[in-house]
Image (cartoon, rainbow, N blue to C red):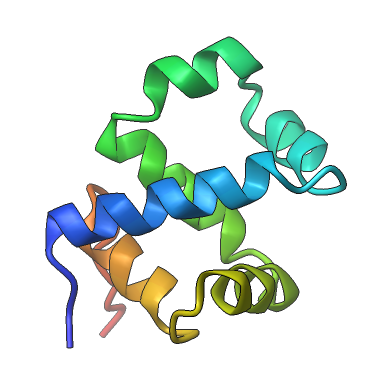
Length: 94
C-alpha cells in the first residue's frame, strides 16, 4: 500500500506537531535542521520540508514508534509517507 501525496503531507504535519510537543526531541530537530520556530510555521506547507521532517523522524526507531503509537498509525506509514513526498523515492543500487 502506498499513500497519496495529500495523505503523506497530512501524516508529516502530524509528525511535526508531535515533534513540537516533545520537549526533549524538539531542540534536537531544530539543531539538526537549523530551522527556527518562525521558519517551522512558514515552511510547514512545503512538501520538501515535510519530507525533511519525516527524514529526521526516521533516524531513530524509538522516535518512529513513539510517534506512531501516539498517532495510532502503523509503524510503516512514516516510510510510506516519505516515499510519496519529493525526494522520497527509494534508491536502487543495482
